[in-house]
Amino acid sequence: MEIAYYPGCTLKTNAKEFEETAIKAFAKLSITLKELKKWYCCGTVYSLTTDNLMYRLAAIRSLVKAREEGYNKLTTFCSVCHNTLKQANQMAVYDKEAMKKVNSFMDEEAEYDGSVEVIHPLEILKGMKKEIREKVASPLKRKYAAYYGCLLLRPKEVAINQYGNPRVMEELLETLGGEAVNFPFRNECCGSYNIAGDRRAVVERTYRIVGNARKNGASAIINSCPLCSFNLKETQETIRNMRPDFVSLPVYYFTEVMAEALQL
Image 1: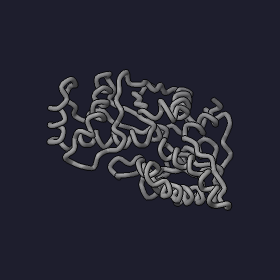
Image 2: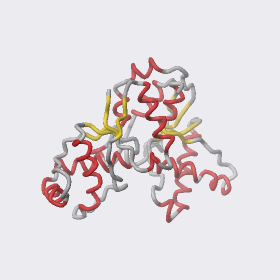
Image 3: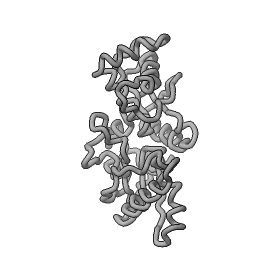
């Protein structure tokens, strides 16, 4: 099976391990991630200002490129990219007045109508438990905390799973031979871009999130967001210096533990 793949900026720079393990793990499952020949930065955060359509142009243009290449589905691993692209696509489907303005502004691209479905890789894997289980060569045999953060589950219109009780990452861990611990902080915000202006807030968030994961028996945290991953990794040393009782936990992308279990 081949599916159109939108990498986004971070998977080409600070999160290369995310892309590398994703491509290998999906290839092992006979899924080819076909990177778009041309794509644009998604704009990072989906603008909540309804009258500022300029911030949504980049996402729409990438969706146009996917359609021009003949795809009706597009996947992306980064939680931020997925959220932004999917919300932009929903605007294209449901807000005809906004799309009339967007289409009239784009002078080189064909008009877009929301005909490309944006799907997260975890949604693809959800229906492949049997295929995954057959490929597992080295069962994980450890306990993990599945961390969703904000953007995989909010707003509910683009959520990849039930907000109050998401299970898609936990089910993947179990299919790979691992154990998912009870983790009440799995959909708490990591602090997001406050890392640039209010590091203290992110440090406090990380202390609570990592501490709760360890308290519930996890040996590592898995996630699907480069920004969450950065915050949860990079602030742990600061916490250790502030709180001698703090014990660190490694943080992985879900594709990294897939690559381990599939022995890639």
